[in-house]
Length: 341
Ligand SMILES: Nc1ncnc2c1ncn2[C@@H]1O[C@H](COP(=O)(O)OP(=O)(O)OP(=O)(O)O)[C@@H](O)[C@H]1O
Ligand SMILES: O=C(CO)[C@H](O)[C@H](O)COP(=O)(O)O
Image (cartoon, rainbow, N blue to C red; front, side, top):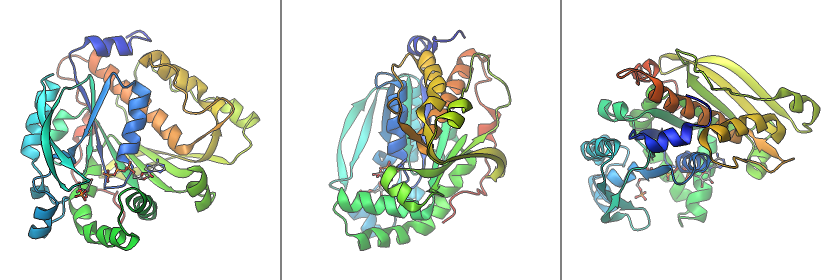
């Protein structure tokens, strides 16, 4: 496929490309989904949370003594049915779980766009769901990062006390380990986030984290895809600390490439990468940071993931019928190395 055709091909194709984002509550799924939506353009991307497919409202869960992480507390059969319909380009009547009230609002009409992102606790839990998702991402912050994020959000924005947040996190832990964490074995990419090696203050004040992007290996090379990172400006312009490291890791019984970043990078290092994504998506401008500013390890991971998603979408378009599934996505068999809680 020639460069710059990505957005046109997507718009003209009937294919609905589904991205699934899995992770615990407060792990950064919504934040990441928002960034991907910005990169691809609001017109191409729609998204919903699979919290809408809870079976019980908050009071009922309390009466039953179960958490929303237990599979039985969710309507995966309905989610499978709806996702299949959306992939076929059909409109659904989607349930709505209201986090402010803890009960269900009336269903809403939901129309798919050419890129659909579903995010939540269990997007990869059944084989049917996995087969309907084209790109699977598992978001995995370290426990102390997740605790800090969740306390900040739930206390400041949702009106809970610090103790209530900590108590709930503790109560959910066993179900998280049992039902959510094992899904990372099915992910094409896992993002791990830890506090920065340059100090927790850098994380809390400037959003600088140590981010590791674990990706399944591609079994093919793709024409017209160029992941350009320019190291020259890093050597000549950067005045801040930065590190990049590549290792291989066992994740969910598979070997994944793990690219770790920490610190802040001069924006010139990724200008070529931004421009390449721009040329492919026709979304302009893709400017994660102002010129002369610094971008964080998290921004870097988002850009690389966006590129990886573009690769997958291009592959589907150019692959012969029946070859669209990436073998790497189908090999997960539990026993995951993530979810280190
Ligand atoms: N990459 C990030 N960098 C800094 N802070 C982040 C990042 N991702 C998430 N956070 C912080 O963590 C909080 C929770 O993130 P977010 O709402 O994206 O999580 P979630 O997984 O969607 O949670 P839930 O499922 O409970 O809605 C955010 O309010 C934000 O403050
Ligand atoms: O895990 C969660 C979100 O991913 C929530 O705990 C779940 O959706 C229930 O929501 P609430 O606590 O608002 O009743």
